[in-house]
Amino acid sequence: MVKGSQKIVAVDQDIPIIDMTQERSQVSMQIVKACETLGFFKVINHGVDQTTISRMEQESINFFAKPAHEKKSVRPVNQPFRYGFRDIGLNGDSGEVEYLLFHTNDPAFRSQLSFSSTVNCYIEAVKQLAREILDLTAEGLHVPPHSFSRLISSVDSDSVLRVNHYPPSDQFFGGANLSDKSVSLTRVGFGEHTDPQILTVLRSNGVGGLQVSNSDGMWVSVSPDPSAFCVNVGDLLQVMTNGRFISVRHRALTYGEESRLSTAYFAGPPLQAKIGPLSAMVTMMNQPRLYQSFTWGEYKKLAYSLRLEDSRLDMFRTCKD
Image 1 (tube, rainbow, N blue to C red):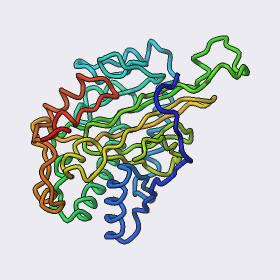
Image 2 (cartoon, rainbow, N blue to C red):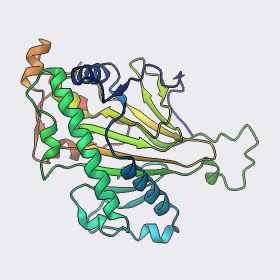
Image 3 (cartoon, one colour):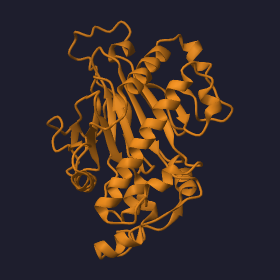
Image 4 (tube, rainbow, N blue to C red):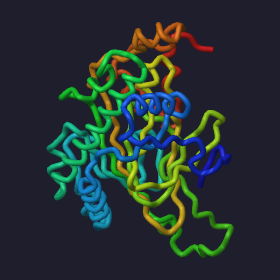
Protein backbone atom coordinates (compact mmCIF):
# COMPACT_ATOMS: atom_id res chain seq x y z
CA MET A 1 0.00 0.00 0.00
CA VAL A 2 1.01 3.62 -0.45
CA LYS A 3 2.79 5.11 2.52
CA GLY A 4 4.08 8.59 3.25
CA SER A 5 2.62 11.87 2.07
CA GLN A 6 -0.83 11.59 0.54
CA LYS A 7 -0.95 15.24 -0.53
CA ILE A 8 -1.56 15.23 -4.27
CA VAL A 9 -2.16 18.32 -6.39
CA ALA A 10 -3.70 18.68 -9.85
CA VAL A 11 -2.40 16.49 -12.65
CA ASP A 12 0.56 18.11 -14.47
CA GLN A 13 0.45 21.18 -12.20
CA ASP A 14 3.43 23.41 -13.13
CA ILE A 15 5.08 20.67 -15.23
CA PRO A 16 6.76 22.36 -18.21
CA ILE A 17 6.28 20.98 -21.72
CA ILE A 18 9.16 22.02 -23.98
CA ASP A 19 8.93 21.89 -27.77
CA MET A 20 12.40 21.00 -29.05
CA THR A 21 11.69 22.59 -32.46
CA GLN A 22 11.52 26.11 -31.02
CA GLU A 23 14.35 28.57 -31.51
CA ARG A 24 17.43 27.12 -29.78
CA SER A 25 17.95 29.90 -27.24
CA GLN A 26 14.31 29.63 -26.18
CA VAL A 27 14.63 25.89 -25.64
CA SER A 28 17.79 26.27 -23.56
CA MET A 29 16.22 28.96 -21.38
CA GLN A 30 13.11 26.85 -20.80
CA ILE A 31 15.19 23.79 -19.88
CA VAL A 32 17.21 25.77 -17.33
CA LYS A 33 14.06 27.25 -15.77
CA ALA A 34 12.44 23.80 -15.53
CA CYS A 35 15.53 22.31 -13.90
CA GLU A 36 15.67 25.15 -11.37
CA THR A 37 12.02 25.12 -10.35
CA LEU A 38 11.01 21.45 -10.41
CA GLY A 39 13.85 19.37 -11.80
CA PHE A 40 11.43 17.74 -14.22
CA PHE A 41 9.90 18.50 -17.62
CA LYS A 42 8.49 16.91 -20.76
CA VAL A 43 9.93 17.30 -24.25
CA ILE A 44 7.90 17.02 -27.44
CA ASN A 45 9.03 17.04 -31.09
CA HIS A 46 12.20 15.50 -29.73
CA GLY A 47 13.48 13.92 -32.94
CA VAL A 48 13.51 10.30 -31.76
CA ASP A 49 12.14 8.17 -34.59
CA GLN A 50 8.66 6.83 -33.85
CA THR A 51 9.53 3.47 -35.40
CA THR A 52 12.40 3.06 -32.92
CA ILE A 53 10.05 3.91 -30.05
CA SER A 54 7.25 1.61 -31.21
CA ARG A 55 9.56 -1.35 -31.77
CA MET A 56 11.09 -0.97 -28.32
CA GLU A 57 7.67 -0.83 -26.68
CA GLN A 58 6.27 -3.81 -28.56
CA GLU A 59 9.33 -5.99 -28.01
CA SER A 60 9.24 -5.13 -24.30
CA ILE A 61 5.55 -6.06 -24.09
CA ASN A 62 6.31 -9.35 -25.84
CA PHE A 63 9.12 -10.13 -23.40
CA PHE A 64 7.11 -9.46 -20.25
CA ALA A 65 4.25 -11.60 -21.60
CA LYS A 66 6.52 -14.68 -21.55
CA PRO A 67 6.30 -17.34 -18.82
CA ALA A 68 8.24 -16.52 -15.66
CA HIS A 69 10.82 -19.27 -16.17
CA GLU A 70 11.75 -17.86 -19.59
CA LYS A 71 12.16 -14.34 -18.25
CA LYS A 72 14.25 -15.52 -15.31
CA SER A 73 16.63 -17.30 -17.69
CA VAL A 74 17.95 -13.91 -18.83
CA ARG A 75 20.94 -13.68 -16.53
CA PRO A 76 24.28 -12.03 -17.27
CA VAL A 77 27.60 -13.10 -15.84
CA ASN A 78 27.82 -10.03 -13.59
CA GLN A 79 24.86 -8.84 -11.54
CA PRO A 80 22.78 -6.70 -11.17
CA PHE A 81 22.08 -6.33 -14.91
CA ARG A 82 19.31 -8.84 -15.53
CA TYR A 83 15.61 -9.53 -15.39
CA GLY A 84 14.14 -8.87 -11.96
CA PHE A 85 10.79 -9.09 -10.20
CA ARG A 86 9.70 -6.93 -7.23
CA ASP A 87 13.19 -6.56 -5.75
CA ILE A 88 14.65 -3.07 -6.22
CA GLY A 89 18.32 -2.82 -5.36
CA LEU A 90 20.12 -4.90 -2.76
CA ASN A 91 18.79 -3.44 0.50
CA GLY A 92 15.27 -4.73 0.86
CA ASP A 93 13.36 -2.26 -1.29
CA SER A 94 10.59 -3.80 -3.35
CA GLY A 95 7.67 -2.78 -5.53
CA GLU A 96 4.94 -4.15 -7.75
CA VAL A 97 7.22 -4.18 -10.78
CA GLU A 98 9.19 -6.49 -13.02
CA TYR A 99 12.03 -5.14 -15.06
CA LEU A 100 14.95 -5.54 -17.41
CA LEU A 101 18.14 -3.71 -16.49
CA PHE A 102 20.85 -3.15 -19.08
CA HIS A 103 24.26 -1.54 -18.92
CA THR A 104 24.54 0.43 -22.16
CA ASN A 105 28.14 -0.75 -22.64
CA ASP A 106 27.37 -4.44 -22.08
CA PRO A 107 26.44 -5.94 -25.46
CA ALA A 108 26.97 -9.47 -24.11
CA PHE A 109 23.85 -9.23 -21.93
CA ARG A 110 21.74 -7.65 -24.66
CA SER A 111 22.78 -10.42 -27.03
CA GLN A 112 20.78 -12.87 -24.88
CA LEU A 113 17.60 -11.14 -26.02
CA SER A 114 15.90 -11.82 -29.31
CA PHE A 115 15.36 -8.09 -29.73
CA SER A 116 18.92 -6.91 -29.01
CA SER A 117 19.12 -4.84 -32.21
CA THR A 118 15.96 -3.00 -31.19
CA VAL A 119 17.46 -2.23 -27.77
CA ASN A 120 20.70 -1.01 -29.37
CA CYS A 121 18.84 1.37 -31.68
CA TYR A 122 16.76 2.71 -28.81
CA ILE A 123 19.80 3.29 -26.59
CA GLU A 124 21.57 5.26 -29.32
CA ALA A 125 18.49 7.39 -29.97
CA VAL A 126 17.82 8.35 -26.35
CA LYS A 127 21.53 8.85 -25.68
CA GLN A 128 21.60 11.39 -28.51
CA LEU A 129 18.54 13.12 -27.06
CA ALA A 130 20.15 13.24 -23.61
CA ARG A 131 23.33 14.76 -25.08
CA GLU A 132 21.33 17.40 -26.91
CA ILE A 133 19.41 18.33 -23.75
CA LEU A 134 22.65 18.57 -21.77
CA ASP A 135 24.27 20.75 -24.44
CA LEU A 136 21.23 23.04 -24.41
CA THR A 137 21.50 23.13 -20.63
CA ALA A 138 25.15 24.21 -20.81
CA GLU A 139 24.23 26.95 -23.29
CA GLY A 140 21.44 28.20 -21.05
CA LEU A 141 23.77 28.30 -18.04
CA HIS A 142 26.57 29.98 -20.05
CA VAL A 143 29.12 27.37 -19.03
CA PRO A 144 31.69 25.88 -21.44
CA PRO A 145 30.17 23.81 -24.27
CA HIS A 146 29.75 20.09 -23.63
CA SER A 147 30.46 20.54 -19.90
CA PHE A 148 27.81 17.93 -19.18
CA SER A 149 27.34 15.93 -22.38
CA ARG A 150 31.02 14.95 -22.62
CA LEU A 151 30.55 12.87 -19.48
CA ILE A 152 27.96 10.61 -21.10
CA SER A 153 29.62 10.59 -24.54
CA SER A 154 32.70 8.76 -23.33
CA VAL A 155 33.09 5.14 -24.45
CA ASP A 156 33.32 4.10 -20.80
CA SER A 157 30.31 6.07 -19.60
CA ASP A 158 28.34 4.24 -16.92
CA SER A 159 24.83 4.67 -18.32
CA VAL A 160 21.93 2.28 -17.74
CA LEU A 161 18.66 1.45 -19.48
CA ARG A 162 15.81 0.13 -17.35
CA VAL A 163 12.53 -1.20 -18.72
CA ASN A 164 9.85 -1.38 -16.00
CA HIS A 165 6.60 -3.31 -16.37
CA TYR A 166 3.91 -2.57 -13.80
CA PRO A 167 1.21 -5.25 -14.12
CA PRO A 168 -2.45 -4.35 -13.43
CA SER A 169 -3.09 -3.97 -9.70
CA ASP A 170 -5.80 -6.64 -9.72
CA GLN A 171 -3.16 -9.27 -10.48
CA PHE A 172 -1.86 -8.86 -6.92
CA PHE A 173 -5.15 -9.58 -5.15
CA GLY A 174 -5.99 -13.14 -6.12
CA GLY A 175 -9.62 -13.80 -5.31
CA ALA A 176 -10.25 -10.48 -3.53
CA ASN A 177 -13.54 -8.79 -4.28
CA LEU A 178 -12.31 -5.72 -6.16
CA SER A 179 -15.73 -4.10 -6.02
CA ASP A 180 -15.26 -3.85 -2.25
CA LYS A 181 -14.20 -0.25 -1.63
CA SER A 182 -12.16 -1.33 1.40
CA VAL A 183 -9.74 -2.99 -1.03
CA SER A 184 -7.41 -0.34 -2.42
CA LEU A 185 -5.97 -1.06 -5.83
CA THR A 186 -3.28 1.59 -5.42
CA ARG A 187 0.13 0.11 -4.72
CA VAL A 188 3.70 1.36 -4.87
CA GLY A 189 5.24 0.20 -8.12
CA PHE A 190 8.56 1.95 -7.49
CA GLY A 191 9.12 3.86 -4.26
CA GLU A 192 10.06 7.49 -3.67
CA HIS A 193 13.63 8.30 -4.69
CA THR A 194 15.95 10.54 -6.66
CA ASP A 195 18.12 9.28 -9.52
CA PRO A 196 21.84 9.29 -8.70
CA GLN A 197 23.10 9.86 -12.26
CA ILE A 198 23.28 13.09 -14.31
CA LEU A 199 20.00 13.01 -16.21
CA THR A 200 17.13 10.59 -16.81
CA VAL A 201 15.17 10.37 -20.07
CA LEU A 202 11.98 8.36 -19.62
CA ARG A 203 9.09 7.34 -21.82
CA SER A 204 5.97 5.41 -20.84
CA ASN A 205 2.95 4.02 -22.61
CA GLY A 206 -0.50 5.57 -22.26
CA VAL A 207 -1.02 4.42 -18.66
CA GLY A 208 -0.42 6.82 -15.76
CA GLY A 209 1.36 6.23 -12.46
CA LEU A 210 4.39 8.54 -12.37
CA GLN A 211 4.39 11.25 -9.70
CA VAL A 212 6.98 13.92 -8.90
CA SER A 213 7.39 15.90 -5.69
CA ASN A 214 7.18 19.68 -6.03
CA SER A 215 8.88 22.34 -3.88
CA ASP A 216 6.03 22.18 -1.36
CA GLY A 217 6.49 18.44 -0.89
CA MET A 218 3.24 17.62 -2.66
CA TRP A 219 2.90 14.90 -5.28
CA VAL A 220 2.14 15.96 -8.83
CA SER A 221 0.70 13.21 -11.03
CA VAL A 222 2.21 13.21 -14.51
CA SER A 223 -0.26 12.53 -17.30
CA PRO A 224 0.87 9.80 -19.68
CA ASP A 225 1.89 10.99 -23.14
CA PRO A 226 3.45 8.31 -25.36
CA SER A 227 4.59 11.00 -27.83
CA ALA A 228 6.71 12.80 -25.22
CA PHE A 229 9.77 12.03 -23.14
CA CYS A 230 9.95 12.93 -19.48
CA VAL A 231 13.28 14.34 -18.32
CA ASN A 232 14.48 14.72 -14.76
CA VAL A 233 17.58 16.09 -13.09
CA GLY A 234 19.78 13.56 -11.31
CA ASP A 235 21.93 13.99 -8.21
CA LEU A 236 25.13 14.60 -10.17
CA LEU A 237 23.63 17.48 -12.15
CA GLN A 238 22.47 19.09 -8.91
CA VAL A 239 26.05 18.87 -7.64
CA MET A 240 27.62 20.21 -10.85
CA THR A 241 25.28 23.22 -10.82
CA ASN A 242 26.11 23.80 -7.14
CA GLY A 243 22.53 23.26 -6.08
CA ARG A 244 20.94 25.50 -8.70
CA PHE A 245 19.19 22.51 -10.29
CA ILE A 246 16.93 20.18 -8.32
CA SER A 247 17.30 16.41 -8.31
CA VAL A 248 13.59 15.71 -8.11
CA ARG A 249 12.06 13.03 -5.91
CA HIS A 250 9.62 10.83 -7.78
CA ARG A 251 7.75 7.53 -7.54
CA ALA A 252 5.51 5.23 -9.57
CA LEU A 253 2.13 3.95 -8.39
CA THR A 254 0.09 1.12 -9.85
CA TYR A 255 -3.68 1.11 -10.01
CA GLY A 256 -6.47 0.05 -12.29
CA GLU A 257 -6.69 -2.73 -14.80
CA GLU A 258 -4.03 -1.74 -17.32
CA SER A 259 -0.32 -2.50 -17.47
CA ARG A 260 2.11 0.38 -17.40
CA LEU A 261 5.39 0.15 -19.28
CA SER A 262 8.18 2.68 -18.82
CA THR A 263 11.65 2.81 -20.31
CA ALA A 264 14.26 4.98 -18.59
CA TYR A 265 17.73 5.92 -19.79
CA PHE A 266 19.95 6.96 -16.88
CA ALA A 267 22.81 9.03 -18.28
CA GLY A 268 25.89 8.42 -16.16
CA PRO A 269 29.58 9.37 -16.44
CA PRO A 270 32.59 7.02 -16.32
CA LEU A 271 33.21 5.53 -12.89
CA GLN A 272 36.48 7.44 -12.52
CA ALA A 273 34.99 10.81 -13.53
CA LYS A 274 35.50 13.52 -10.92
CA ILE A 275 32.23 15.23 -10.03
CA GLY A 276 31.92 18.57 -8.25
CA PRO A 277 30.42 22.04 -8.67
CA LEU A 278 31.57 23.72 -11.88
CA SER A 279 33.73 26.74 -11.07
CA ALA A 280 31.55 28.89 -13.36
CA MET A 281 28.47 27.92 -11.32
CA VAL A 282 30.13 28.84 -8.02
CA THR A 283 31.25 32.22 -9.39
CA MET A 284 27.96 32.94 -11.15
CA MET A 285 25.83 32.25 -8.07
CA ASN A 286 28.21 34.13 -5.77
CA GLN A 287 28.00 31.50 -3.08
CA PRO A 288 30.39 28.94 -1.58
CA ARG A 289 30.75 25.45 -2.98
CA LEU A 290 27.89 23.45 -1.54
CA TYR A 291 29.33 20.02 -2.33
CA GLN A 292 32.61 18.21 -2.04
CA SER A 293 34.17 16.62 -5.11
CA PHE A 294 33.97 12.86 -5.54
CA THR A 295 34.18 10.27 -8.28
CA TRP A 296 31.05 8.76 -9.75
CA GLY A 297 32.34 5.38 -8.60
CA GLU A 298 32.47 6.59 -4.99
CA TYR A 299 29.00 8.12 -5.15
CA LYS A 300 27.51 5.10 -6.89
CA LYS A 301 28.90 2.77 -4.22
CA LEU A 302 27.29 4.88 -1.52
CA ALA A 303 23.99 5.24 -3.39
CA TYR A 304 23.56 1.51 -3.80
CA SER A 305 24.42 0.83 -0.16
CA LEU A 306 21.41 2.84 1.02
CA ARG A 307 17.67 2.38 0.88
CA LEU A 308 15.77 3.81 -2.06
CA GLU A 309 14.28 6.79 -0.22
CA ASP A 310 17.46 7.76 1.65
CA SER A 311 18.98 11.18 0.98
CA ARG A 312 22.49 10.76 -0.39
CA LEU A 313 23.66 14.23 -1.37
CA ASP A 314 23.64 15.52 2.21
CA MET A 315 26.62 13.28 2.91
CA PHE A 316 28.68 15.26 0.40
CA ARG A 317 27.72 18.77 1.43
CA THR A 318 30.64 20.99 2.40
CA CYS A 319 28.74 22.30 5.42
CA LYS A 320 25.72 20.76 7.06
CA ASP A 321 22.99 22.52 9.01
